[in-house]
View (tube, rainbow over the protein chains, first blue to last red):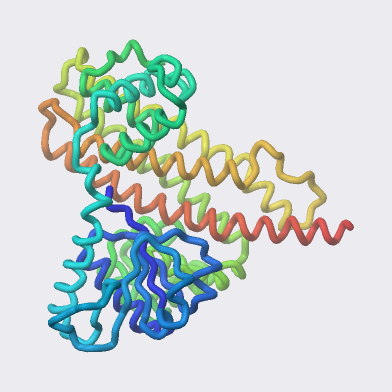
Length: 188
Length: 237
């Protein structure tokens, strides 16, 4: 669940975008893939995508105006041995096995940075914050108690949630109780 | 799986996706339908087949959601369906999960902090969900039915606007996910594997059902209400 990446596919060809989405659902842990049939369609969605797949025709026209962390261009060719394009590319003329291999390679190179912190255990400081959250303190109180800024508290909380995959305060509270960080009587 | 069509045998629909069994129950259709088709059963139970099939298809296909079509369905039929879903949660699913938790904890010491934390979380979750369902039944649903009937009524009170509605849905969904996640990742006690596994299966199933329910409420019910409210305002103006 931690790889809750937000993916978009921009292609006028519904068969291409649907097919790619099916492959992503089937062979990756991606669970949210939005399809756009036109550039206007993409703009009105206002979604922030971690990865945006764009067909080559749309890319040629709109390249400068696409905003996404990673852009992958769908190129209607057989895979090239020497890939010198500056942007990541997915070659669409190949068999299914090769396509899956391409997708796998692409996703693992992209997710290296983003998934880095989700694998680790929580840090000591995050643990301090977690204990106070579980005890029912508000962000402002936590900031005062630990002598850190509100923004730092919020960042710690975001990291805790992304590492543990627990979103709610009651969820964090049982995590803290189960792991002996606080006793049940300390829960307000 | 293919989209469900009126001429399909109901039995084939269920063989294709057994999770639809409680869904058809909500329409009053019970197992033992022999060779009857979807259409025949709808006729027998006086159900609008178009509505019935759309609900089944939306449930079966996570990416299938014909919003513009669904917005044209009778709002009373939608509410009836949502209400039956509530009954299923309240009278079947929640008590079932609660019993499973009881049997899970049977052999775990009462001193266990973990036992305390998990039991507490579930009870709190149950309370919150029941309160949410009740608010919809006592307040939201009657309001919409009245609005639909063209009765002259006050606007839905501010404290229970569609924003609150959506926020409560998020809460209910997120807590259920957390509970499941904690049972999968962080438990230490020596639970009976089978009982714990069954609880987790049940929670996954519940999560799936709830997601569908939330989707219908947020994407269909709320837009219909907003549209009716606007029409009423412009009529009064």
